[in-house]
Length: 326
Image 1 (cartoon, rainbow, N blue to C red):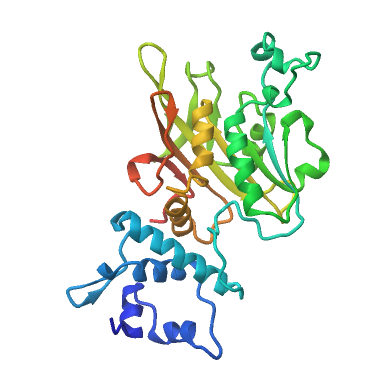
Image 2 (cartoon, rainbow, N blue to C red):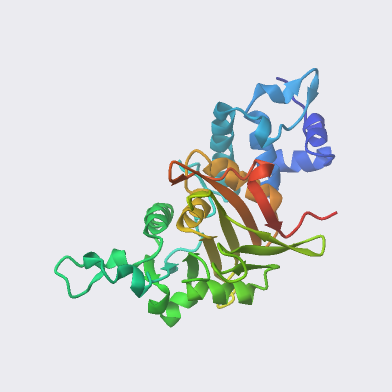
């Protein structure tokens, strides 16, 4: 298409031509920031970037599914090359941890006794005992455990209930599933992270609880929705990633919901292959340079199934932190 560096510089928001040249220098290249590589991948994912004699970077919402797939392949290759590696297949996502041989522990709440009292598979005295029946959010656990193991083959990945954690578990990468009602570690981490939000437990301030946030100096409770028969029609999912309060060289991640389908939705936002690339790209664009970030999103429930939230759609994002700088 005969695109020149000056045109790229203008399309990328007014960066200098000399900066573009330094990134493309074959002898002594300067590594571009990830945000610029995302712009490269988006621009060259479609010929629609060149329209009417001018060049522009389309938004993710404007890309077709095929163009998003092309963008993902380009971005994967550029990111690997930036790290001095040969291109390899696979998506470089938020569940890929750079450190080899570092512990990654997924933490679930134990299923409360009243829910497993009459469940023979949850009784250790039963010959049919299955330990996974004693875990809350097993669907989210299975989804995430397989994904993290696949992304981190050289790291020990384990899962435990919150009352089984060891001191070494706390100082590795922690991934917390479920909310403050049952998962005590989630409550501790959210309090230590000093987030400008709190999870209101079910039947505390509201019958079904929710996430209380501050908007324009006023509190707002983001609640799940149930129909007149008590069926869940929309859950609320909270995803938080930040520096671990127990070891600043490790991370803590919270995948949380008011109900189980919200927790699963928070997980699948970054594991579901149909949405992983666009949600990962959104996070990188929106929270570039931030050590910690948080997204609360809606999870529609259709036919009893929670749908994966698409974070690129504004109506799905109910609250974000840090806020966009004015």
